Structure formats: C-alpha cells, structure tokens
Length: 84
Image (tube, rainbow, N blue to C red; front, side, top):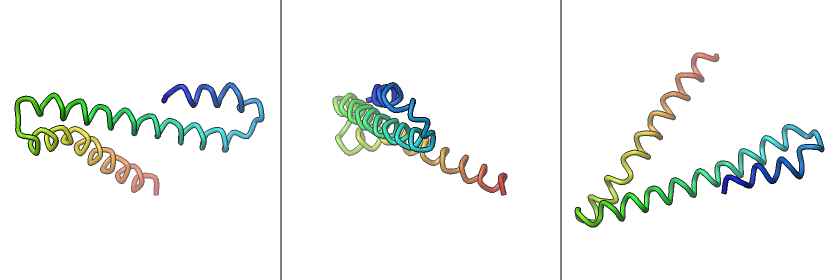
C-alpha cells in the first residue's frame, strides 16, 4: 500500500511535473491509509468481540476513528479561519 508512492516517484518524478506528482502520490497514500484504518478497525472489533457483545465491540472499535476525525476537522477549521 505505501510502496505505491515510492514506485511512482522512481518512475515519474524525472518528468518534472510536480503538481501531477503530488496529486498522484497523495491519492496513493490516502488509499493506503484507508486500507490500514479498515484493517485496524476490523482487528480491534474482532478482539473486543470475544469479550463483549458484537454491537458494543464494533461501536467501541470505531471510537478512536471518530475521535481522530473530529479532532482533524476541528483543527482544519481553526487553521482555515486563521489563514483568512
């Protein structure tokens, strides 16, 4: 997953199209992060499922992702208002 930006860099950076390079690298990185988050969520849900009911286990497994998402959105909104 995270090797794709490296491969893309090796093959295409010599073309000096920096905007396209950054856009494509960001796309590959976001795909990798999404896959890792899904794997972490399912692994955490399965580990909690052995001790808790299914709804509580998977609900509890989503709490770190919800917390990070809320923090990220709040942080980005604060930076947007500071920049203007």
